[in-house]
Amino acid sequence: MTSHHKPLPRLLAICADDFGLSPGVSAAIAQLARAQRISAVSCMTNTPDWEQSAPMLTDFPSSVAIGLHINLTNGRPLSPDLATVWPSFPSLPMLMARSHLGLLPHEAIQREIQAQWTSFVTHAGRRPQFVDGHQHVHQFPGVRTAMFDTLDAMQARPAVRSAACVIGPGHAFKRWVIRQSGARKLVPLLHERKLDANSVLLGVYDFRATDYRSLMQAWMSALPAPGGLLFCHPGLGEETSSGDHPGVARQREFDYLSGGHFMEDLASANVAVVRAWP
Image (cartoon, rainbow, N blue to C red; front, top):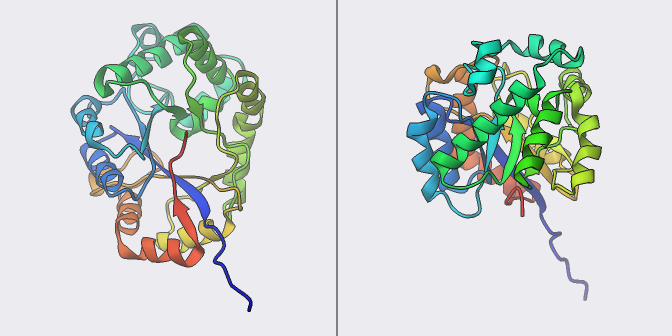
C-alpha cells in the first residue's frame, strides 16, 4: 500500500519595513507582528514617530526579529556631523549617483549609521538583530563600507539583508537596478565577516498594482525550496505616503496580510511564515 506524504512546506520570512515612519505605518506593522503574520520588523530611527512607537516593540512575539532600517533618503540626519553636510537627506537618485561616483562623506555617514544604531538601542532596549536599508541604501558603494566600519568597531554581528538574488515575477528592470546598485559586491563582505544573510529576496513591485493578492501568490509560487525573504510596506491610512510608497498601496498590503486570503494562499502554496534570522 502506497502512502502519500505531504511535502514539507517552503519557508518564507516576511519583513515589514519602515516601522517608525509614521503612526499609521507603525500601528499596522505592530498589528501584523502581534498576529504573527510577519516574522521581522525593520525600524527607521531618525523619524519623529520613532520614539513614541518604539515601546510597541516590547510585546512583539519572540518569533518576530527586529532590526535597523538604515535611512539616508527620508527626512533629516540624526548625526550633527552629517547634518552639517546634508541638512536634509538627498533624494534616492542623488544618493545613488554620489555613491557610485565616490562623492559621499564617509566619516559623516559612518557617524550617522552609528547614531541611528544608538537610537535603536536607546528606544528599543536591545541591539538590532539585523540591518538593512531604506530603498536598499545599505548596499551602495561608500554606504556599505561605512556600515561595516560601524559594525566592526562595535563588534556587532547582525544579519544583513541581501538583494543579490531578487526574484520575480515581473518588474525585471527594477530588480536589475536593485542588484546592480551594490548588492553583488555586498555578498563577499558578508561572507568575509561570516554574517547571516538571506539567499533570495522577494517583494519588488512598483506600488501601482491594485491586486496585491495576485502579487503575493506569484511570489509564493516563485519561492525556491530553500526559502527566502519577502519585504513589504504595510500601513494604515493615506497619511502613510512617503516617497515612492503611496499610502493606498500600504493600506492594500496591510489589508491582505491581516486578512483571511493570506492564510488561504499560504496553505494553498504550502508555504510557512518563519523567523527571518536565527
